[in-house]
Amino acid sequence: MIDRGWIPEELFEQIKKVMPIFGAAVVVLNGNDVLLIKRAGGHLRGLWSLPAGRLNIREMPEECGRREVKEETGLVLSQLTELGLTTYMDNEIHTVGISYASEADTREVNLNEEHSEYMWVPFDRLPDNLAPTIKKVIGEAVSKMRFKYEI
Image (tube, rainbow, N blue to C red; front, side, top):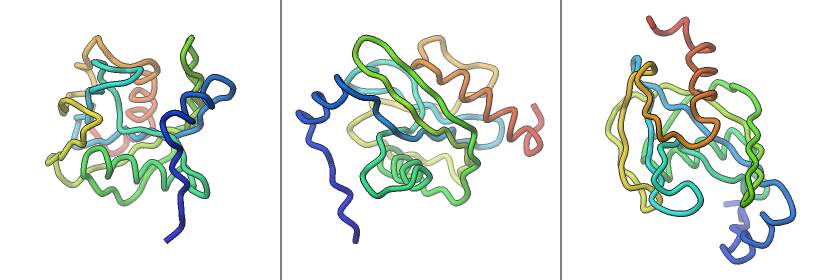
């Protein structure tokens, strides 16, 4: 197994002050619904988001997306469709990430400790308290995956 070089939280806090953090996010679809997960802590606490996280050393972005979905929700995804690049900046963090979309075979989610709850929600009924850029990324997924769904 390849050592992915997990960054201790203290070091991560220093790194994010001086450079962008690269990661991946995945729009997980099931029928006409998208999976949203509520962050339990950290910068996005209380906001609905997508399974996402930072890229580890020697890890491809698509691997990162799959790993984050599995770690955060227990779902195992097969094929990911690349959506594009997303950038976000505020006073605490600057992130650059590749977004993906994928279909889940099940709605059974097992959240890890990073999240307090989840919901499957129709594309046209997204909650107001979304993390930054999430609505845009979901819109890109719906547009790119439209041929699979009747919206």
